Length: 238
Image (cartoon, rainbow, N blue to C red; front, top):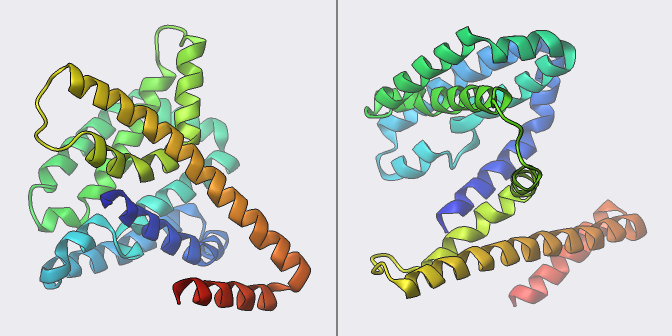
C-alpha cells in the first residue's frame, strides 16, 4: 500500500527524536529549525540529482532526513506555544500570517513543478497549509454543530489508522476505472464502512500487543523480553 511508506518514515523520526529533544534544549526552537532545515535541504537536494533509481521514494520521504524540516517545525511550534502561547497564537492568527501563508503556498506549488524546487517545496506547502487551516478553523463565523465537531475530533483521533488501511480497501472494493452506477455507490459506502472497522481493529491489535510487550518487560526485564520476542518471531518465520 502506498500509505505504508509513511509508517517507516515515522519509525525513523521516532528513533531520532531523543537527539532532536536534546537539540531543542541546547539550541532552542528557532535555531533547531534553522540548522535542521539547512542540513536536510542540502541532503534532499543532492539526492534529487544523484539518486535516479531511488528518486520517487527519496522525494516522498522514505529516508527521514528528506522530511525532517516539517517534523522539526512541529516540534518548534509546540515549544513556542508552550513558552509563549499568547504571542504565538497572535502571530498564527494575524492577517499578515494568512497572506504570507497564501503567498508561500503559491510559491511551493510553482517550485514543486521543477526538480530543484522539490528540495524545499514539501516544507513550504506543509507549513503554509497548516497556517491557512489554522486561521480557517479559528475564524469560522458560525458555531460548529456538535455532531460535526465530534466527527472531526473522532477522525483526528483515528486518522493514522484510517490512513494506513484506506488504500487496500479502496483497491479491493472500488477498482480503478469502475463505471459510475448505483452499484458503485454501494461499493464506495462499503469501502468507507470497512475502512472505519479495520482502522479500529488495527488500533485494538496494536494496543493488545503493546500490553503484552509491556507485561513481558515487567516480568522478564528488557533483555530477556527482547530475546523472547526474537525467538517467537523466528519460530513464526520458520
